[in-house]
Length: 373
Image 1: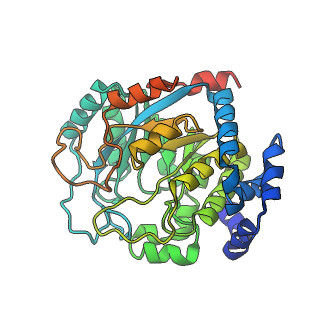
Image 2: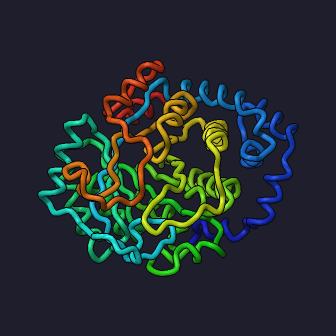
């Protein structure tokens, strides 16, 4: 069966790295003047040669985003259901080898989290768990979704990769989007970061978006974890993945997230450091490649960075996040996956958004956007 794996086999990490780093300022200029850019242009826009063009890229990204999405910024918030995990991941606070207290929320605790988050104004939530399919498998997810549907109009999930039939079940239950990050596309080193557990199966994870597309999930979220490997090459691999998916599952909508490694229990040192300017460059490059793409930003980033990125291409952003199960009801319990950086309240961040002339949106605006296409 044809999947992205067939295309991925033709991609050579070292050759792509050489191509990106050999791009010139003239390559960047040519990419910027095009009305529509391709993957080779994307290489130029994420290359070191594009650094002097950052202001021009930012202005173009702002204009393209406003053209497609207006000045609306969709607000979402994560609800962590469990920190139990059967994997060892070298960079994650939930990793099985970390000696931390483990917790999976009960029905009553799930409802309590929902009530608190709803009182904060949120209507779009992202359910997150560790990867422990025996404890938090499909039955747990179906139950949680049914508990939460009376509170929220949009429920997305970021959990372990599953089989197509399980995604079909979640689709019928009304799951709006599924986020699955490859972490890194460098297959040789992937095993070093995921030495034990189901997540160590590189190909199964790589083929997850194909299973989502076949299951008819409305939106698929992609991304890599910046800090594991060379961010430019990993980013390009992810763009290749996105390009394949858009052509293969053309009815599906897509989102890209930009998680940079944050401190956590048992965390590793960064192999590839990405500066704030480089992250802005990357966000703008994605917007210049694809006007339709949803670009999402979490509270991993600092207050200053998030303030400045509001106008540059991001369309979906979280605030007031807790990364531990039960964290909204019991904020003093330290079970978090990673340390968030921007700890401002929702009300404070909304004020920042409005002062920049943008409108925070808590309700679903996808339907109105799709009807205008």
